[in-house]
Length: 251
Length: 294
Image 1: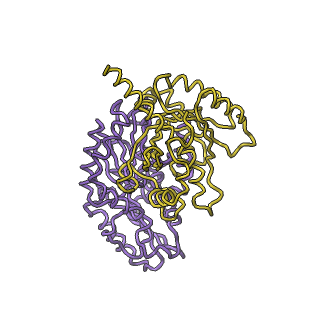
Image 2: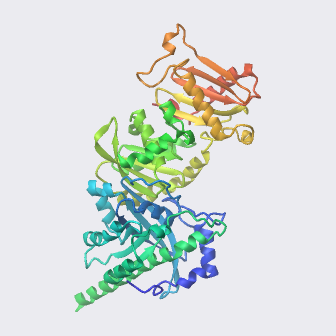
Image 3: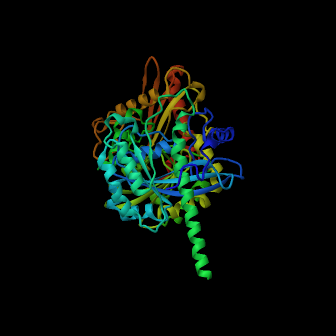
């Protein structure tokens, strides 16, 4: 787990450059709704901004809100009723970040692989498709379901190995229902210190504050930024490992 | 079963369905220009997916499909189109599907890719290729077609290209081919009528209700085993119409076609017959309208 702000400048998002970049390339003309992109489309940002693509596999107990989280992150409408996801759905989200060390803006292209719990169990090819060449895993739990939180260590041991250097992030959903919360702050703190994995929080509800055009993105900024930073951190570690191995081979 | 809930909800909330396939038992199509170009792109891409079943959907309506895809039963065609529309938006997906007639016990893989907003390409595959492998091929196969795809998307919601001009009094129509099980419907055919009187969803409702009234009473049904009503008459009605305070509606059948046209009250009742026949000829003779191909 890296310290927030180590690789990505969080204050950059308040700058004019960031606001302009986000409004002109990622928002529709009304300045509120997010643009979505088909495979043949992408934000028409200047070629000086490098685009790096990452694959994230989203796991978690059934009905914790994996699909809603994906919709929230990508800007698609959030489903109003819960329904089991058939098979696997891939969604794309673009997010810019200013990298501290390079002093350059990088466009992160995150591909979120969201699979239904039953499909994963029933069809091997779906689990394989999700885990194949993935850069990271996003573990999702619901704050109103203690069981989903307790299951995360099982997912961790099942899907990751100590040496695989996968980017691991935990995301708690339904933080709008804190009155019915079954998972305490203490639980989350303990988890973070045991596993060294950051725990993020999200509310998958429509924004009530429609008058403030950027409020939706403000809410998402810390989440997307942390995800990007963890992925970047993982890339640096794997690059270092590669260098070390090369050095070893050289001697 | 649980994975079908979204599809079932979608069908049950049918008063707001933008398509007509649930009542006509024929899959909704959209007519695009340059159909042969798009068809070639689709066939090449389907082949890349080691498959013969490929289809291009524009806003949930079939714009182009391979021969094999068209050979699926009407129920399968309709369910596949509705299924894809009922699911949440995403870039691509890989979902197991059981086809009621072709393969009720062995699941196939339905892969869909969102090319541009509103346009999806679907392929039914066997065990290979993997989703990520075929997705990496999408740009290579479809990038040259991006302008054609954008043009195709612009046809929605009219559903027929702008160069097909129909009478100014037409609010909407349904053209059903019971042989190929395709239907072409539009409730946004004349832009100048947008503000006047009846809005699109009401037009859709009128057409749906009238269709349900006429089929089984005057015209025979296309669904097998439900040929009730008209068989009792000694003659076979070919045309029928209704005139109300707010709209006029005319229906005719010719060979395997059934054609329903919704008019404003401005059209003289005596002109409805000839205008309907003229519109019918325009739509069925257009070379881009592939409704007559089975």
